[in-house]
Image (cartoon, rainbow, N blue to C red):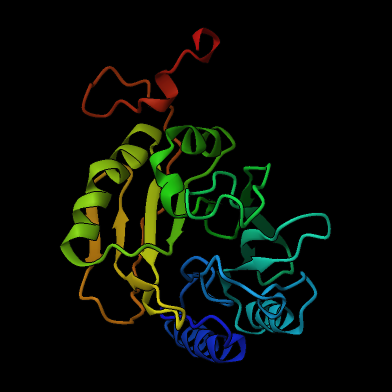
Amino acid sequence: MQSSVGDIDGNLKKMIAFIEQAAEEKADIVCFPEMSLTGYSSKYGPENILSHDDPRIITIKDLASTKHINIIFGFMEKNDTDMPYLTQLTVCPDGTSMKYRKTHLGTREDGHFTEGNSIDVLKTEKAVIGVALCWEAHIPDIFTVLRRKGAELIFIPHASNLGGMRRKETWLRYLPARAWDNDMYIVACNAIGDNMQGSKFGGGSIVLNRKGITIFENFNEIESMNIMELEGFDHDDGMSGNMCDIKFFQRRRPELY
């Protein structure tokens, strides 16, 4: 999705259209790129920073309920004591929610945003989910923590300038390891187009199964919504003697690490 800095209402209108389309397709979860509601930029004014009770955020929460769909979306969140957070909010039909504030800031974000201090999971009707943001996908520890807390499906919204085959090649260096090592599905999506402040994002989306195999990809560099159906989650202990079926996460010895 393309999001314009300074046009929150326009971004919201576009998100509503995607949410309604996803609901018509009977999707359980719809995930938007990083800072989809406010647009991604380190050059922000106070009008781009939203509090948790902003009416536009309430609109999305209400849509989760009326359309019976889980919605994952991003915005610049007001921080009363310091610089804003880069926040990705998951809202559920029953009113529960999970707020993930980016815990590891990129170099272009240092000095502009405040780091979050919590890595949590959320149990939805169909899966236990977790969130990491953009370049945090390079940090294996985040995914180990999420898996240890019970995550089965991880969403990684991006706002990255890489697009096309460069985006694909970069993701395929490390996302398969995040999935395979932790026995989790991995879903990543990236913002696309001009943010109206001189930055351009490259788009792309990918889904990897629990063995790190790509089961869907879209690198056509146009704004679009993709729908994937994932198999249910078994909870095999992974201690089979067959090396092909071993789940590495269950074989860890964390008392040594």
